[in-house]
Image (cartoon, rainbow, N blue to C red; front, side, top):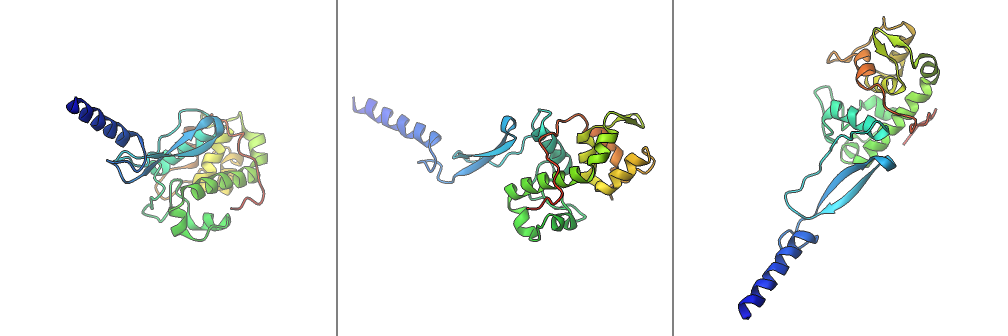
Amino acid sequence: MKKNLFLIGLCAVVITGFTKDNSFFFKESKQARYNLHEANAIHTVSKSVVPFEILYTPAADNLYIGFKEAIAFKESRGNYKKINTLGYLGKYQFGKSTLNRIRIYDTYSFLNDPKLQEEAFYKLCSLNKWILIRDIKRSVGREINGVEITESGILAAAHLAGAGNVKKYLRSNGELNSADAYGTDVQLYMKRFAGYDTSFIKPEKNARI
């Protein structure tokens, strides 16, 4: 009888250890970030099982959340703390001048704040959408060099090369095709990120954090 009670007690401790934060077995609490596409938002849940690292999984939908995660995967494999060889920062690989434009000046804090990075990406998309709104209306549905022009492709290309270079590409019918320092050009992003529903992004003239 005593042996049975001991076994029952031991099982209870083990189960509790695997299901509660700050439990008997796992003292260090971890967090996982995941995307909930229906709400176009990021939610944080607490986990206690070690090791449990922060995971960044590209969403499979074609809404805003899928759009941004696809770009993030291409830019940094979803790594909020990545700094590339040219000094571009974070999950979406922002340049310092771009961050300054949306009033972010502390790059250390930026790298360590996933929420701020997500807000910055949305704000930049909002600003680019406002800058390119006429070109979006004129160009969506056209085909340039065999690539169908979509709003999401335009916004992705603006993230890569800036809204001004996207204007040049569209208005020159693809003849002025700017590329970044690694050789990735506007047309590639137009094609790679075409077809997402980016209506969630609202154009904003003075998009700032």
